[in-house]
Figure 1 (tube, rainbow, N blue to C red):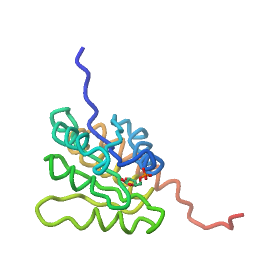
Figure 2 (tube, rainbow, N blue to C red):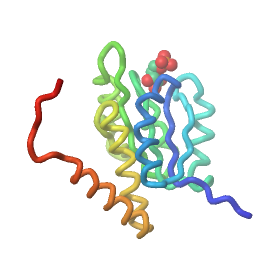
Figure 3 (spheres, helix red, strand yellow):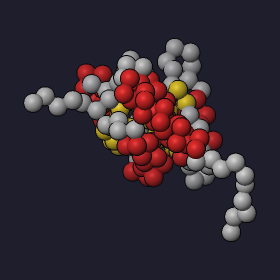
Figure 4 (cartoon, rainbow, N blue to C red):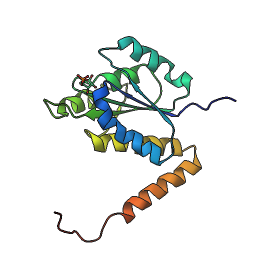
Length: 165
Ligand code: RP5
């Protein structure tokens, strides 16, 4: 039987990025979207990056979520080597709190886009939701799951604030 490849790749520059990027994985799990998570460092494993980016489309991926911190070249370099949409997640760095990551990812020169999300957990979660929205254009069942996810989110918001301990 032919195995259907996962449509989403979550790549990250380091094991230390997983605590952030796991928030993207959790959303994909909730929406029943298969993904493959890999460590691919633009600096420490440039050949792995080249191999991944060059073969990503052929492997069957449709969207790439790339998280990195500091001098965060991973999303931009990946986007340069694949026609697939790349969503970049700036990981919060220890020294500059992720502003370095954000500026490294968001300031792509015209010609090679990276859809850049917010720093940290919110960015990772939203990257997964954006990936879902892109995939839902061709997948009505996923579109319904995404709609239900958003409805549940709306229902979970209380009308009145309460004092928290
Ligand atoms: C980047 O350097 C990674 O994306 C990570 O956010 C940052 C620090 O990596 P480690 O030193 O924790 O491996 O390449």
